[in-house]
Length: 227
Length: 201
Image 1 (cartoon, rainbow over the protein chains, first blue to last red):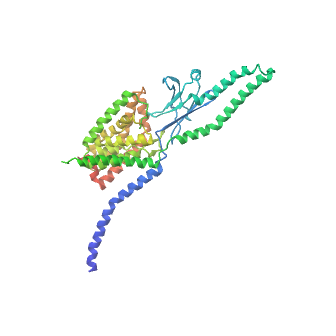
Image 2 (spheres, each protein chain N blue to C red):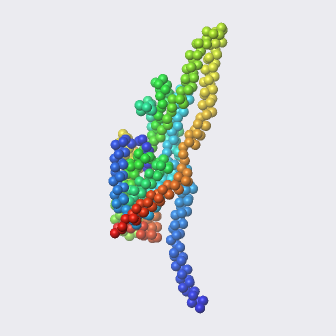
Image 3 (cartoon, chains in turn cyan, green):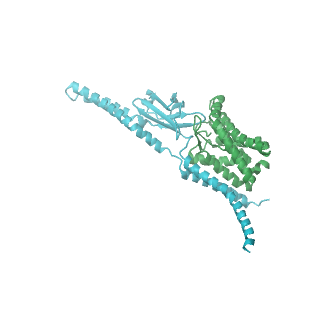
């Protein structure tokens, strides 16, 4: 009797094995998807990061692909934000950098600068350099300069008063320079942190949206009487 | 392959959007009830494929998989790509909402063209159909590169120069996509031939 059962049982086993070979492909795809999720999240080729800061009288622009290298030979256009007038143009270096002196009319008019860097194949990024962020140092210097003549008549000795504002201005400049040098990496770090990176929840969320959208579509089609 | 926001002029954007709407309508018309899960799966695959970095070549590139989508979906690739691109724009900031139409055309038009171009070859027995599958994945990327150049022509960039750059930069991706399309086609043909019904219909 047991021998008789052996045949069909073995056959059933065979059936089950063949039934389970199809989900093997499913497992493969699940593993593949997980692999993609784990390895690919920081890889981003499309978003360009443009970042500009001032140092003394010049503006330094840096640009790179998020998660990639610098934008080499990218076209830089500096526009005035409100009118869109192009003030300065240029190309980035191999390190993705470009510098230009602040045009005097920009300084006089306290204009906001929109710096647009475009790379090949339709990639583009921009950075808004607001007047407040590059002019405070200048206005402070300008305020200090008119203040100096007013203060000159009051103190009696000439040499000291001439020296004092000069010293002050020089000190301020030196301080600004030192601060800029110290703060540049911090600024860069901040911009790097402020660019949103793709998280796993973005990916999973997107996949969920796709399922939902097509599920909805299937639902509406299923409501229709099918021929 | 994604064109960023603010690069194209409004007229070109409107043209792209119009073409995308037409293609989507065509795709939805051709998409029957049974095809929906297939379209959804490939839409999800396209959505995630853009995160797979191809580190070869001068610029950072990623997989597109539009040849595979054309092979498996035909016209239904257009709504699938549109939805995936929409979510990529929202969640990954690839491309943008205003360029959605243009980007859809760039990636979906080659899918549809390759479907009709290689369908006769794919129907034939194995050596010919395998070559067809590779060529489908390869050509779709090539055409997408040319379409990027065509769209950028409106911005005053010379077509030949941009096309050269886009095509040269994507050569590694073309080969990788060709091989991926080939293997998925052979795998499905063996394991799930009903997934390929679009070719034989």
